[in-house]
Image (cartoon, rainbow over all chains, first blue to last red; front, side, top):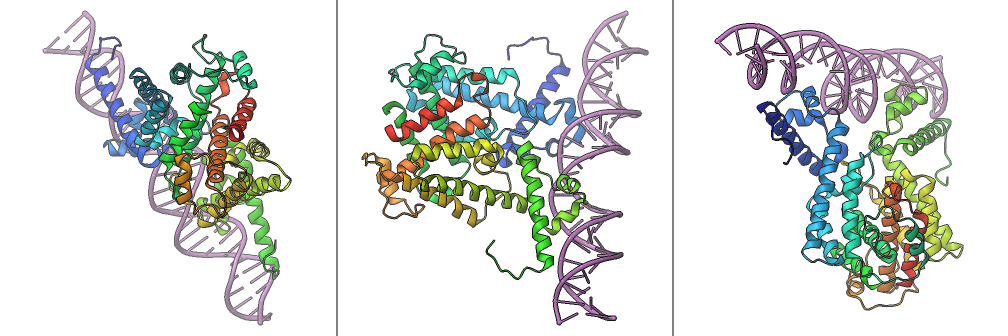
Length: 213
Length: 213
DNA sequence: GTCCTCGGTTATAGGGTGTAACTCAAGCGA
DNA sequence: TCGCTTGAGTTACACCCTATAACCGAGGAC
């Protein structure tokens, strides 16, 4: 968007095809999950033969990396937008849940079982820090509880960009993350499927515990 | 173990080879995760050629099913043993965490991202119910809080074998599950890796919230 | 001792990642 | 405008995987 404007027709074409590949990749991912993502299948759907895609993504991992980057970006934007429109922790939680239900495999791509050989590049963790920063900002009202975890976090807080946030806020931001992920990932993985209760109500109540206890 | 004792030498051999295959499968799983599980590689390590394994497991999914069944069985035994030796919810949580850290991929096999085409057979959900039953038993001291989720769970409780357990206990058992899984799965997936704090302390504090708030 | 069951084999089909060698058109500078 | 170069796309191939088919041979059952 804001990169060098010296885009000749060659680069424009390249960028467009790259985007089209990613589009097909998202569709395939949403349908069958990251494990079923196949460069060859994407190529076939685009009407070209397998190895052609390697001009645009050097490997399957590189394509997956691009997807992960976009997913983190999308989540960070969603959370940030909710925060800036005045949402509290509960509002953020619902924004995250909606984002996850919109494309469950996209959530699992980030927070699901990591793919065996894959190692995330540094910039993706930078984007996930962005999410953390918003969570901490939304948690700043948290009162100090005096529990040992807060003393521990006060000494291991380099992951928090906000150097002035009280340890209680760090703890609450982590609680947000782990509890939202706990309910959400079990729901997305289908573990509540046969149980009959409404996952949304469990989610609501769990989120309520964040600000209550 | 307690099945028909009319085991001729043929069946004995078959069972032994089947067990050996599963053993190699567990090693391969622990090393590289379920996605990297390969029947051919197991066969090679056992000194026989690929298709021979299909005499023992009709498909890759069937082998994975056997692994999942054993994993559930092992987890249920672990939780039950902790419960019977007098452990409270905190004790159960630590038993689960130890079990998970002992073989992270085994935990992820059950509670991680589901494999695309796979559908769990009914008996595995039966074993997971066993875990739930113990959790509910350990949660029976939970006091009624009057929150709406409890009314909801009181009407959707067919997943709880214990028909006399108060709704507050059902809620607490679910909280145990979702919160333990929330912290544990993020830890196992490496999402706390660069953050510096001790996952064990976060786990402890999170478990403490179960009985406190 | 004969038969048949069953474990093992090779061959093969089909799908996947990724590389190598080649072709051909489009862009670019002179 | 003309050539040269760049790069997109192709086929062929090596190597992984799952899974099936056809076949062989030994061991158990009677």
